[in-house]
Image (cartoon, rainbow, N blue to C red; front, side, top):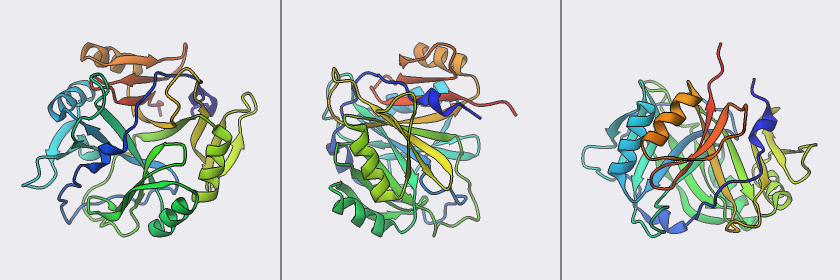
Length: 283
């Protein structure tokens, strides 16, 4: 098992979040897709909102060996990325309204139930509802919020999804919130989504978020020198971190953070989207 503390690093380059990313139309979706029951509160899916779909598709297929499928015969705005025979992420076109180097954003989806109640609770706790609960036929019902300090996250209720055909990849394994006020952020996620909050002993401005006796995410302090808006970074497992980083940088990514003697890193893809990488543990 990975040491939880390895995720709690204190700095990275700024990610400029913009709710205008979410103005893009939701894709037409097939009626029959499948997912296994996921643990509540854990990241299970992510979508890349990008101003350059072709460049994003090229980077992720060339770097990770993923394959691409369109999402519906008439839909050219949304593409599914597959890791082998398992769906792993989506790529959605949107109008690029950010700066020249940051035209993309990964938005992770955490598993939840009673989605409408969660969204109502989030709104009551001063979150902004960016996308109301809607039929995300790929995997159930989905909504997107910005927490009170600007962190953008999606909620996905898969309880009613068809489980007969296709499984989702299990390689999304961690999320970390970089926050201007970690204590306030921890309180929001505790009160809104029933996370158990555990203060990290070595760093009193950092917290773990747990559900069902398992740590699902962490919150750390965002340095004052960066844009003061909370932002989530989502981590995905790779087989060999060194090789993946070498391929990623060859394909135009920049390594934002890589602790010495650690099995994780954060990269910015060629369009500026931040993605966390962790090395898959041997059996």
